[in-house]
Image (cartoon, rainbow, N blue to C red; front, side, top):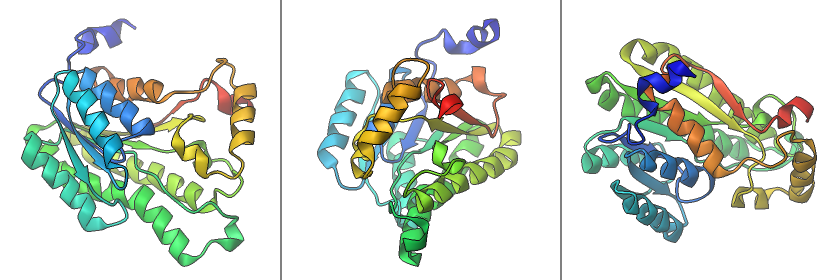
Length: 263
């Protein structure tokens, strides 16, 4: 712990002067990450696709912490929207030092019922958006010799979950592309990692037909005695953006209260 405390984490505003793009950050896990970074002084581009009011509320919370926020509507399924989101953040916030690929979508059906359209949607929103976002943000980071790329994955990248086939494949793709980004970018001071939360109580669970069973099983099998919150994920993301975590490169960090040890 001495090493962690000795590299600036004791400074609660260690991200002052930096700016982040966080996809899907109006609600849920994205909001948790946005607020955690803002608490450290980071300016935030809050992205949404449909729920503008929630994004505005998140932006207001960021501003109340003394950081600057902009709200940008962009569809992560569209390559040009992803590029526009990052470019807009760079223009209005002055830089893009941190890119967080959090937005997620997908079709929840058995694998034999997945169509090409379902496949493309899940892969494009969840994985391709991270590749395009990182590519667009990289020049901003390279100019400073410092940057962070974080992506949000899930246990479904490695374990078979009911009706999760297309989404699970997209999550595996997220982890793979993050490893490749990590190796290419680390020599330039840009660090890429994945965060893999356990079951988090957000609106996203409402789309799962087996929502109640998922929650019940997680509550029963989480040794820590509670489910992960968006705030928990945000704190991990903020730490991974600190210089204390600069030697964690291309890893998938699980934050699940021990759930995957028993699930």
